[in-house]
Amino acid sequence: MSTNAVDGSGEGIPDRLTWDELERLPDEIAEAIELWDGRVTWLRRPPHEHQQVSALMWSALTSSAKQRATDPKDDGKRPCWQVSMETNVFFSMDKNSFLAPDFLVRRCLERGADTFAADVSLVGEVLSRSDTPSRREWKMTQYAEAGIPWYWEVDLDSGNTWDVTAVRAYELALIQTDGLKVKPLRSAMYALVGEWSAGDVGIDFPEPFRIGISWDDLAL
Image 1 (cartoon, one colour):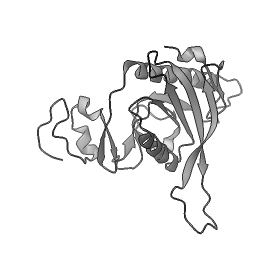
Image 2 (cartoon, rainbow, N blue to C red):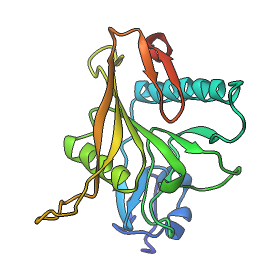
Image 3 (cartoon, rainbow, N blue to C red):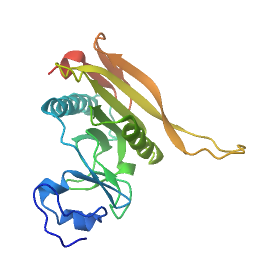
Image 4 (cartoon, rainbow, N blue to C red):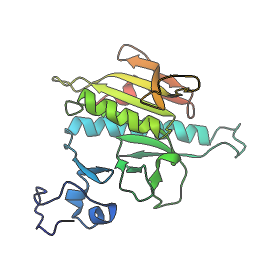
């Protein structure tokens, strides 16, 4: 890593870092960075409403996970789930590739354990103006090729209200390559399997556990 001084603006940060180098940066700098193959991506700080909606999704998913955990039909053999917000998901053992989705569902891990893509069942992004179509598609591709089964998107009205206008659920679909003369560019992609808008009563989805979210749960 460059030995240039680093101020609060991130000036002096090189274009490439390892995870070990990133950990040595001040927290206010490190928290604004994602790495992919060691390349630095700067994250724009989202508006207050974006963070509120992320927190509401976390709360609603946590409530559903707790209901599943207290289900009398649960014999202890079904997976245990944890819900997180803005947690790094590592795509390589050296941790030099990671993304931080706005919310996620992972299998239960020990306290303080790192979250790897293999631990994650659902990732979600709250979309705002900084999410360009190319960036959105690129992130979906990384999640899909890592084998994460479910991907959710939350749309916001970026006008005056910032209200949630739609929620979409995607399921991982593996691409079969046997017998194809031309190899597909991707080994996996997401297929839209559920969509809800503000006119609906709420969200009801069966995976990775029964998820029930009323539209009021997402109201700012």
